[in-house]
Image (tube, rainbow, N blue to C red; front, side, top):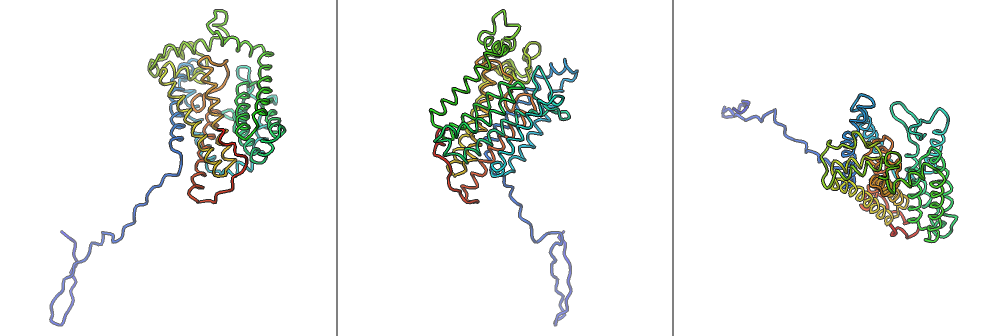
Length: 424
């Protein structure tokens, strides 16, 4: 029954008027529901990075359970720490994304020298933590700070800022390219003192790639590349354990080295062979349980190859290729919009992630000598995961600022630097 209220009113003829009363519980005005607008992001790039993080978490769990149970009696020891690293990485990436690129440009030199200071701290007796003969970490509670991972980020931001300020020197004179290399070589010497040959090679390759994109003449680029390659060859030839790695990877199944220096690679190749085209299934791998050392870190891709086969391995590498491709596309757009620093940051982050993934995959399949480099996003290692997340956040920030410029929300600056962005 509808709710009514009788309202009696005297009229001249004595009649009674009955007026219906509207429902007091029915609101006359309703607030319109607000539309939830998603932030302007490159969701394909974000999705690729998040997929690699999630798939890496699953593979670290699969690869580390037997090892953690044997070593600590806790099967989820490595998985718990890896999950914590992913959480920290996502938190840091949110902070990095919220910071405008202008701030990174203004503080790039300061950040670089902070990285140098942290590299020096590792070498101070009593502060650095040594694992398997390498002194690369500073213990901080349950986690450890690896300064060389941070230097990958700081070297890119510093050189990107330098290429904006000294673009004419780089494109016209040899000294313009040599100056930043001389400063970055200080960081490389400190990293080699740990020692960490793989990280040094990735940083130098990234720096050379940025110098090339920044307009360094080909003869100049070739000379710098020759000098760096000569120095790295000398480091390999005159260091016995590096030379042993170089020779053993060429024939890891040689009976004399198969159970010594060639053991990791030979077991990784067996894992890929067992996997075939589609793998033996998640959790069914044998190599990770008894044979493959560092299955959850440096050789995680071999576990992927055994359990998901050639198709799974190819899928992972395709995602890395897509991330690098998008980074270069975003950098190219930023260059056209006059955001030279942002463009070089996107180039550098894409180069760094791509080179590290390529080196790790090359080591796993026997294309390159064994190096202690993790697979970005996926391998166990808190610092590597966190820096990969921050690098992705910076690429997304560049793309976000590109969209704002295109929509006219901020004035478009005048293009700076040379016109060599098309080299990418």
